[in-house]
Image (cartoon, rainbow, N blue to C red; front, side):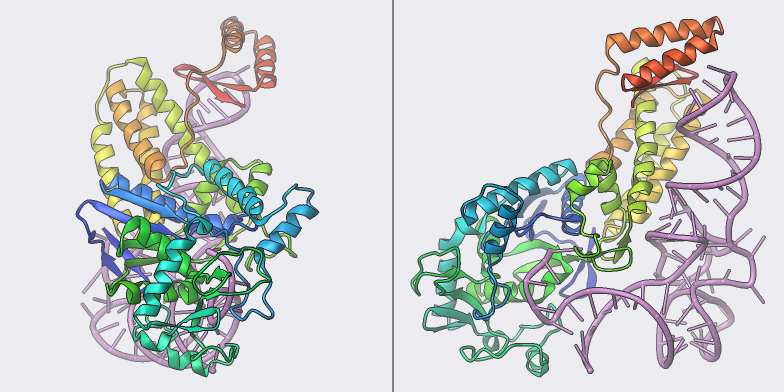
Length: 481
RNA sequence: GGUGGCGUAGCCAAGCGGCCUAAGGCGGGAGUCUGCAAAACUCCUAUUUCGCCGGUUCAAAUCCGGCCGCCACCUCCA
């Protein structure tokens, strides 16, 4: 299996640190605002990666952090705005009863998990919160000070980038380039403009923690180093995030982690998802293109359809969405859902017939794996899925498929579309309730005596009760309205 | 200013030197099936064509150069 690595800018063979086991850290959400589709494109990529690794037989340890410290918008304290404070104000404006930053975080963490579940994510093994790990961060900062990789100025601690020769290798922002760039603010406390804060003492910050350097708060980057190493060890197989994290966040993480442990590489595969565009531009609140998952659900798109849309474009491809993208996804999911029901019907009916689907399944899975093994080529893999769907439908139309054969096709469909992609809706267990089935039987009787008027009336009545009945060769087929 | 990416049918999107007379989805058209509807299936919907212009090669959507257009990162951001 081959995956792209931002650090080397190449697609490389995945070679687990520990055979059979993959340790993945996903940069998770900041929880002082509602997560939006863009965030979830990245998270959905992380979830699919985990699912595919499991499908390929790896035991995966997946950690996703929740950033609940309200970092300042700038390293330089003076002009900084506390994000948590903004979140608090925003929620109060909406009439939500919150009194402190922890409650703000709780509120948005709950929202995040709701959206995550709606999109059928597997649970990461842990969702560590930054505020629960301040002592771990302090220990890491202390280690960096002891090794001379960081320095203290009053109550502030900065990382000394000049002590880390590899700084800039991930992003290409070498120290020379940063120095030349006019966009870095001058902070007289820093020895080098690219030095970044590990700890800040500032009485105005909302969230305050005790430290050897005074009461203050941790720098943004240190939390991920501390939490990933705490739960996954000093070296990880894969670390994911959005492309914006490459610099400065992940660049700084590498510097901190490797300087602290003396082990390199901190991460074997850095994987970054590209940002999405809405209607050709960055999502923007003022343009009304800042959609949350909840917004899309409210517009009538199912979690499965949203997931299909988010997952069906390669993660390193900049993707442009409009509402039509979600309509397309909805239709594609419906088609696969239809096949799923059809197969379940044949599988449950216990019919004998040809076993021809077996080889079709094997061929499809083989091709699917070949595409996915190549840095998660989902478009190619999806092509395989849809070709498979067409071939199976064709066989079903011939009416000669055995139950065993249908079962095999069912397994393939579920493996690919549910286990890996996670967008196949579950077939509602038992079908319609007895009263609906009774109406259906009346309708069949009406049809038998060619009373189309009554038959259509019953179909409308069934429809009004939330079910759709379709006539097929195998008898009536039931769907949720 | 620095760095990186993209430009394939109405839309989305694979392919990255010959199996391309270019996957797959959505949309559209015609048909099969059906009392009707729905679903499904079949066929059609890029045929000197893959932004444009040159070049390399026996061979290019795929490599090289130039141009045009779009985007991202370099600053909080997935």
